[in-house]
Image (cartoon, helix red, strand yellow):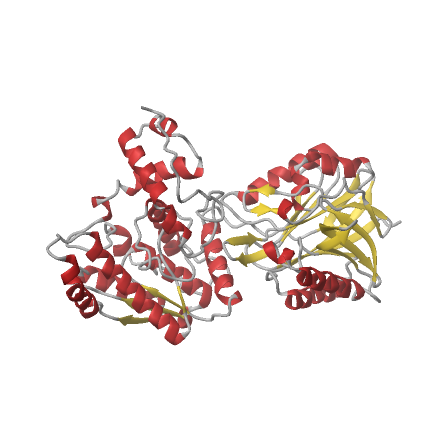
Length: 555
């Protein structure tokens, strides 16, 4: 028995499928734990495979390689004083499990299985894993330790069972993605478990971007009275060491570092930057290119790209046509200069006019409409993809959630690109972030401080500039109104009647509903982007393309 315990939590950034690279990250964490004289090291959920490996889990060789890597890491504890708590895929009783192995001095001394498998939001673990029984505590260094895995702590009976079976401390490894206010939701959840069970809980989360998900880290530890005794960095890797002492009232933290959480304003920016950075880097790219139109969306994407990669790795291109205003040209150049990025002008005038000339026999005397407008957008897409192909830079697309909701985007045109950091941000949220970034310098970002997005871009009316004197409000309601309707319709899933009851015109709500429904086919073909809400298009909200349902309430 011991009355002192030093626990290390490795808040790291694994890559899904990269078994050898993740194994090396884990070896580094083990070395750090040895150097810190830790008694115990915990890694995050499914660390070696990365979270979440999806249908890689249907490949028998991948699972076999992952389990072999787990054995290799367990063997690396030989000759050390560190007990390793490693979440991993595992076979037990003939079924694939989301599990934890406990290793000491080169040997696996215990396994524990995840009881509650999430089957909602973005994870469908029941597709891959078999649930385990209610877990029993594990004795580590003479201390009874409970190890609920991620979803397990959302269900009170798992932690209560562990406490009733004598667990003195709970260690919870997680793969918990960020969405708005998620950091505070986790805290409230843990406080509820502490109030019920009366034992301290250490919550470890991974960090980094994985396709559309961003894991924000912010690992923490709390005592039974709800006191926060340790907290890791947000949106950055960290190695958090805490010292625990057993006293008359149970285990208490004698020493722990508490980092300040990112603010509710900074967190979305950091999430977008981290998601963008990891998507580009983890897919083998080092540079990005984007169309810089002089509008708010492309300016914010350019600023996020500079914060993610540094100005030397961001290339902006203005692609003017006859409807592009001089103001837009000036604003785009001003933005590029403030960010310190390469800026080129590539006119699409001749290519568009030649395309219209060649199409004239087919178009005949029909009046100009959206077809001609879309040629401009698609020609810009062709040019940008050509630069991406030739220079090896990933093309970023810049449409916001408001536009994607109602289909105010051109498929194979401005929707072209490999990634979209604004995909889950409504238009007014884009404006808010622009103002916030101009007044703040986020942590772990590589761009300049100060007003990097010209005020002129923030102040002017948004326009696609595909015809003379065009503004977005020619086709759409004012963005504050549109965003409020979309917030209710998409993110809250309210009925037409419920939205009308909030004071909105029924005809307008029905029109927006129709636009949202018929634009699903576009969204299915859109680039991935950072998920910031529980109802992000694609990974968080999957509606059928062919859909005959219409909400007739509120008539």
